[in-house]
Length: 163
Image (cartoon, rainbow, N blue to C red; front, top):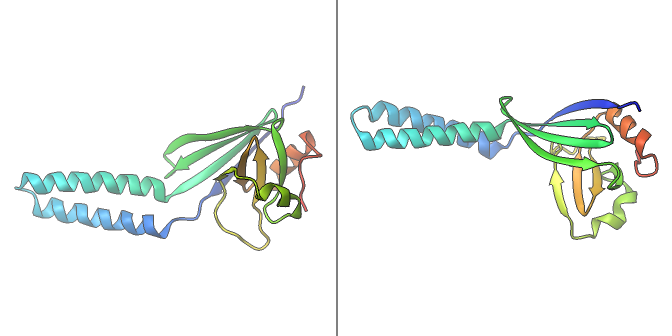
């Protein structure tokens, strides 16, 4: 049995609000450290704003890594190129359809009350490279490359559409 291994990395569009919050919290931290050298309360505020700046920086720079191996699509969330978190695993056996997000083939699946997970860049470019996968009552939005599309289509040719 030959296992196909394909890896794809997609950078998420940076949130303007989180970028502003990160810069604002860093500035507040610097100000409270400078003016709070002899005041314990101001140093505590500086520590809290510093922790907030760290978490804002982690969530401002997000990438998604798709991994296709042995009929399974695994999605990892990479935060600030330092921390990796498992986002989800989806089997091609349970997949109902895999088609471009603007395809007419998805019309019957759009009206369902299903949970939607967006693991794409968040940019509707022209042409739109985002795909929607319906898998077990969950709509998953991905942005795979051509090699990953070919690998998934070779396993489930009647479920994958590229129109």
